Length: 173
Image (cartoon, rainbow, N blue to C red; front, side, top):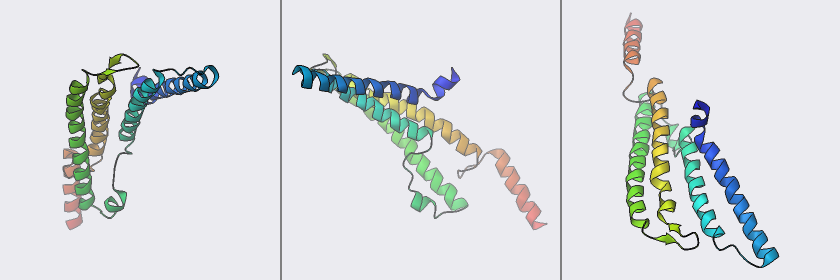
């Protein structure tokens, strides 16, 4: 069960991608062979693509592949690196919170409209933003906890501070 939860983005993303692929193939076959396009296929493919894209971003957060300006970040060392990392992670955290909040408001506004061909609420398309942003936030907090334990922030765990003080005392002796 833990393995499934750890890889939920990949599992759901793969299933949605396969479904989208078959829907688009069915649309092509229907249009080309039977001269009768599937009216609903384009809307459903767009809906699935929205979720697949958002899940891809969540995978990026999970594997620390989110936006990181490496050429600037790599110029720092020591305390500068910790300050840069703290700043970057703070920006990502605030961005995720805003994505959840703005996404929820957008969902509330769009849910009253209907996707014409599918005859479902347009809210389903916009629900991907707050839902998957929440998943991204959870993944981000897991990564943040690991980085904190590794001492990659300005504020370090208590055990690291004590070790740093002991090293400083040993260097003076």
